[in-house]
Amino acid sequence: MTNASVIKHWAQREAATYRQGEDRPLSGYLAAMGVYAGAVTGLTLLGRRLGFTAPKQITPWDVTLFGIATHRVTRTISKDAVVSPVRAPFTTYGGLQGPAELHEEARTDSHLRHAVGELLTCPFCLAQWVATMFGAGLVFAPRAARLVASTFAVVAVSDFLQFGYSAAQSKE
Image (cartoon, rainbow, N blue to C red; front, side, top):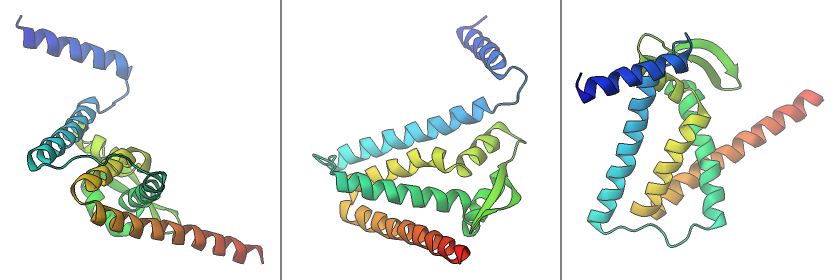
């Protein structure tokens, strides 16, 4: 038995033990982690090659701004109807979930589609990816990153005001 076949057999045995009969898309998760790691590595190498450096400090204002913007961007990607064509190859429509949001389920016809479907419908899962892109924005184009983040932060504040207004209206 070659080393590669021993490793493959070990990985299959570990995956089967982990799944306990459930169909979990472990190979899809590995592919998604590989894409994320490759993107971070590529951005880091590109930044170094072009002479970009990380900010000396990230202020509490930046953390707040990018945190609010990350929240809004992840909700947009994972729940907004307008973005459903991007999610459609990886999900199935499940109806309305809340005000201006859709409920979709990850497709299960392949491990990769399942994993990507879970990622695209989960704002918590997307947050790391979006926050990483804002971090890259701070390195490559800080002014533009702050402008984009400010736009999404304003939308998030508007959303909360809309919910507050609706709640006040329903109490009357």
